[in-house]
Image (cartoon, rainbow, N blue to C red):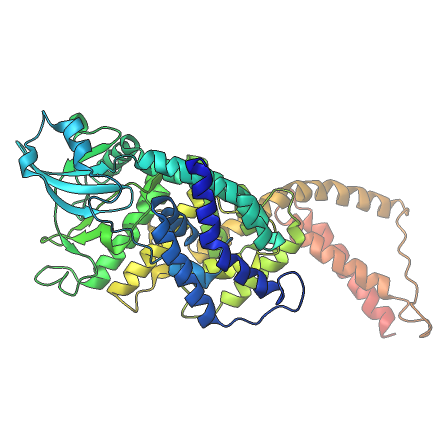
Length: 521
């Protein structure tokens, strides 16, 4: 039996009890029977068991859990919360000693007797080593991990048809796309050349901002398997003593974290996508220090514009623009029933409006819950942005429980000119309405001129008839209608360079007087 088949059967065996439990949730007797009512506590315990199984199955499945924690289109909120706790601190010698990679790559460049292990994850291990320019940090890919990941990716792809049986029909659109999305994310994380380039680019983007620190990378000592960088230290951002004896408080740091990540994603278009507390530190001088750029992304300019459009639609509560933005981001299919989606999104905005405790996670949860009846997916780049928001908001609330993430987001967008204030938005919308009306307004004078000519020649006849069986009605109502129409026309003509409003006003007065005279005669 091949290694792939053995691995596939092992994975199926480990997840089979959960599959049976999910099937029984839908049908008490697996294939028939009523739906079971399962409370939140049962789902949480089950999610923790799934998480522990992923940990035991190794790197690829740990990453699956981390990715699923940001996929509300696939897993319920309880499971997403539990999967979000997946941290992959792994012993140095698990799956092979990373020091063998260091010796193969850098034995002639560094004094390996000074090599000191400091941290480890499922994909890589981190060392400190002495160099002529000072201490360096080496992020080293575990030996053989790439082949293991590639095998498990094949297993995961083979599981997709089975998993589709256990999910509801409306989720299958997302399930069918998740394998490609996940494969792209994890293979990018294995490529240290890509991480080095993105890390250097982000560092350059913040070169003029002395509030943010990103380690310098050493290209001549780096490769696809080893990333050499400046060794910098700081206090973990959520430690109790993180802000002792420095000139910044937790609320100010939470604001800095939020604006830093918004600048990466919406202004620079290249961002660090894993802002959990282990990757953020506070230096002794009060700077924000960011580590580990393995999970990162570069956004095309069109995606940046579409995301800003999404924010603008939410701020304006413009449901039609919100639908357009979700379609542009490929979250919804272009052929989706726009009328039904619009109705659902109007309910989302109505549910959130007026609440003082709105969070980013609440918005995403409400949005994805209400959209579950439609075929929708979250593309990898958008998914990583959602991860930045949810994880980053969690960090900020650990720093300051009263921190209002959305207020800071809105403030940043206004500062950058990415959205307008309410007054500016109202003026802009009014101007757009005027622009759409100009062609019609331009044709009004000519039409009114023709109407006056017909009136002078006696060709214009106004006839009114009573409605229903309530008697003859007001026989003179036509004069009042003409007077009202001419008053409106006079108001419009006041914008025209020729004084058409004068005869229109005079005629309006005449018809009004005739109506009053005949009405009260």
